[in-house]
Image (tube, each protein chain N blue to C red):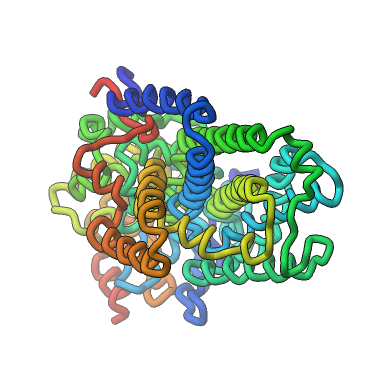
Length: 235
Length: 333
């Protein structure tokens, strides 16, 4: 029997009250792969990540992880299964220092390669600032804490929601170089981005969302910029 | 990895030694404080307990309840019911009141947790009013006019009035040490880190694996138990309870919120500062009647405008002081 894909999203709908944000979205990801989800504002990219992370409940079997349905599990149990979210806007805990923020991520106690020492090897600047308030860091450093906090739960799948948002291009390049190291160590990722260049460079597969539907999907090397423009703007 | 995490600072170590010295001095208060002094100290201990528990509930778990008088009155009524009607020794009634409140807190939470924010606050108040109305319907406990503890039970506690007052004093001191110690232990545990994260950002806490609902429920139940034990002791000292006194929103919630907010909400040390301010004001101004309450209100507004993190927060932000080793700090960096 072939191994099931790491993540299988099948005909996922998502609603905010009466407003429907996703219409029958499907997505497949194998172990160690990276999927880029791109699209305009309001296309449903963050909604898709929040649904996978359990912050929005969905149908029991709309999301399969390692072959098991997780669509109706609460967020805190999904972390235990091995899915960690780096949320849009970072959402650090302002009254905890850098190290405490990282420790919170590790409380779930999943075994694996990541621990405080490894995170500090990955982001040496955080080791220097470990006792500083997380709010005193620069935007790029805060993003490192958010990524480190997610890694502390030793996820098999990392969900990255617009990790380049508001950062200088040179910082974005560094962050993506680090993400490449993380993925290289065997962690799969779903990367939501508006910066198409970064997303395409790291991804194996591309999904383009438009008004809550998948408008285009394919291997990263095979879709052209023209295809993406068409799917992105719906022209 | 070199170094490690520590919570102690020089100031917090000195604070710990000072706290122990104070505790020894307070344990001997019956020999130096006199009757009025002891009564004042008991009051202060119990207000410190109520404010610290409310601080845990509102300042950490984000459950801004204005209905904690439900559990104060419940504790008092459990004590009077068991002692006066069933002949249970009054001191034994105190832990029983705590257990009873913990059990009753579960259905209360099942109802009020459906509400959020301001709606939760109002819902908790309504719940406390229901408790008050139920108590006033129980004729065996004196209905609306209340009940006194029978003289036989009072004299069975200790032969003399002086002996009874010393006994109540020590129990109040012990209860305060136990409950504050429990809060410190909770905040220093991994659950304390989770509670702080939860207070900062509920959604981020959930996506980091914290079971927000369960954490809040556990805090609500523990706080209810502690509040009821304090309530039982308050009315054991007074020897009389009525629905209006037991479930008073002024005495058991408004003053408690005043103490916590003045001292510094969301900080363990806050209620200590708040209790001192509150009792200094009460002892000097209480004769002024309603003017006293207006002064309290004015001070509360002034502190909220000028020092939104309370008097202790105001001092701590400027001097990086903590009196107890609670906040985690990293050593060797």
